[in-house]
Image (tube, rainbow, N blue to C red; front, side, top):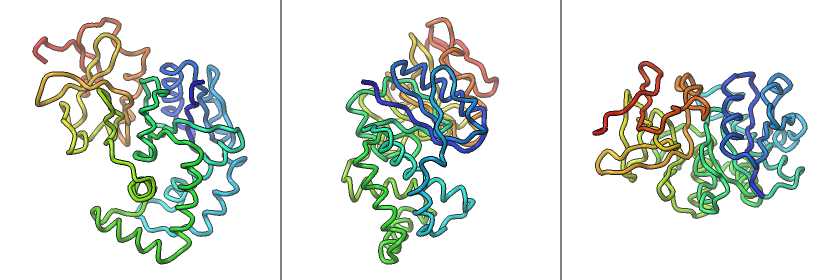
Length: 284
C-alpha cells in the first residue's frame, strides 16, 4: 500500500494547493492529506483529504507549556514548527498510520515515495521527511524532555553554538535527534542517483558532488519526462525527487507543476529571469 503524503498548514495560501496537487500527480495511489484550518479546506481537491488541526492538538498544547522561545523568529510561528510534530504523531495514532511522508507546503514532489531506501531521510530535513510512528513517538518525547529539563535544554543550546551559533528551531532539533538518538548517517538529501532538495536557492551540501547553479539557484533541466540537476564537475545528471521553494522562490512553483513542464522531450532548462522553460544547447 502506498504511504500517505501529509501537509500541515494553518494559512490560506495558494501555493499549498499547488504542492498538494503535485503530490497527487506524482503518487496517484497515495492519500494526500492536509491537516489544516477551515480557511484552507478549499485546497483539498481531487480526492485530497482535509482534517482540522484543532482535532489533533491536545498534546501540542501540552508541549506549549514547556516551550521556551530562543529564536529571532516570531513566537507563534516558531512554537508551531515544534507543535506540528505532536499534531502529526497524534494524527497518525488516531488514523492507525504506521508510516507517512511529511512535506512542507512549499515542496513539490516528483518521485514515487514508497521506495524503502527513502526511509533514510527520517527527520534529516524538517520540510521533507519519511516518518514512522515509533520514530515520531521518540522525537516528541525528546522535544518535551529537552524543553522541560534545564540541563537538557542547555546541552541543546551548546549544540546550537557548536554548529554556528544558530537559533533554536525544529530544524536543529531534528538533526540533533537524528545524529545522537537515531544515530543515522547524513544523506544530505542525495540517495542513489537522485536528490531531495534542501533549498532551491542553495547548492547541495559541501560533501556532495555539486550540480550547476543559475542566478543563485539550482539549474533545473527537463528531459525524457524527468527533472534533473547536471553535475558541474563531471558528466551526468541527478534526478530531482523534490524541490523546496523556500521564501521568495515560491513564485516559481506554478512553472514546475507536472502539467506545466515542456511537452517536448528535448533537453530544456528553466530560466529564472524569464520564468520560462527554454531549449538547452547540446553542449549545456
